[in-house]
Amino acid sequence: MHIFKIFTIEAAHHLPKVPAGHKCSRLHGHSFRIELHVAGPIGEDTGWVMDFGDLKQAFAPIYDQLDHHYLNDIEGLDNPTSEILARWIYHKTLPRVPGLDQVVVHETCTSGASYRRKDYLAEQVGA
Ligand SMILES: Nc1nc2c(c(=O)[nH]1)N=C([C@H](O)[C@H](O)COP(=O)(O)OP(=O)(O)OP(=O)(O)O)CN2
Ligand SMILES: [Zn+2]
Image 1 (cartoon, rainbow, N blue to C red):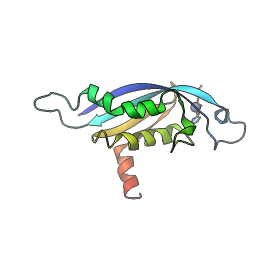
Image 2 (cartoon, rainbow, N blue to C red):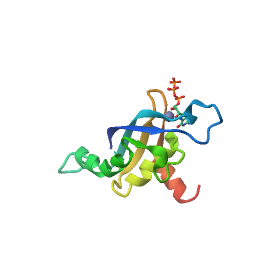
Image 3 (spheres, rainbow, N blue to C red):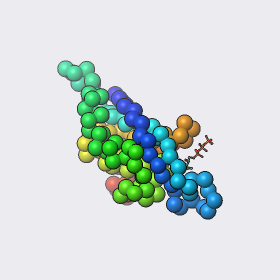
């Protein structure tokens, strides 16, 4: 079973590695939509995989690190593409949410990236 919770983060960034003149080389901001997906069995007694409230609480310190911040200033996010942000959030959140299955980052209404548990496991074995 999968559950998910959605968060919105307001943040600024620029992409330092794009070619000169690329629109994303300039400072700009987004209302990033972050989806956290958790996988696990439905609890016999609870009827849920995990309380949405506990998921929100677990994500709170990571949310606070990102919301209304300049992403490029955050350690590990000097090149804050959607891909790198999704991976960064997965790595930061996993110790607090062991069932974390996928992080989806919507950078705009039409663009985004997702990082899945299988991407994480592949990284661990150096694939
Ligand atoms: N693979 C990636 N490509 C781009 C990223 C990224 O993180 N990963 N980021 C950007 C920019 O930061 C930009 O803010 C988003 O780009 P884009 O989708 O082109 O934005 P638009 O609002 O202009 O999109 P339209 O729907 O085409 O109007 C660029 N590329
Ligand atoms: Zn952007």
